Length: 212
Figure 1: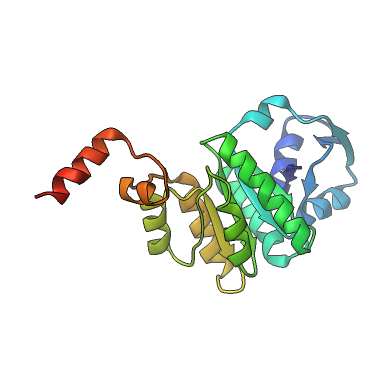
Figure 2: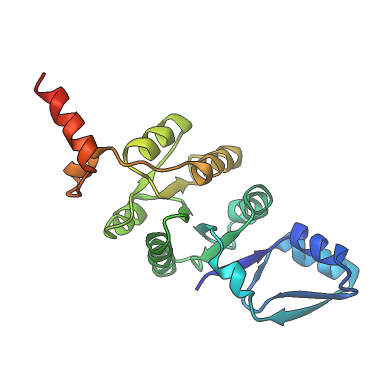
């Protein structure tokens, strides 16, 4: 299941709203280590409440990763600050959990065209193969901005796979922020090769050029 992310920024915003010494968070929320330290240092009480239905329907970035990995622990609050809503699906540190989280993310992205999926993993080969079994998902391992741009504009990439073994934290943040704000477009020629159906005007244009 998806879990809302609670960061120090989230807690500061709630404290400013005049909730006294009681902090309310979703019952299934994931609290970042920094946020937990912030709560502990101030002696604030935490109340777990049912998640806001409106928040569940808002467009969000779906992120899969290992909650215990230092890179993910740093990445989550950075993305929450820059992008807003982030749904985090922890893989629980083993392959079965990772693949289950990827399947859940694929389902969420396929159900809502405004959503994007990101998987942060050591080796993205298996994840990419699994994700691309979903008809509405187009996933790829990306290692640079130029590659990302081409995949978004030609493949209609909607699930980004990043390997933390080869990318720095800064590189990953930059790629995710660019990806989250991009508008995927599927090239008609690529769509046809994948077995899809390209829009009629685009097909006619492609054929007219081919016969010149």
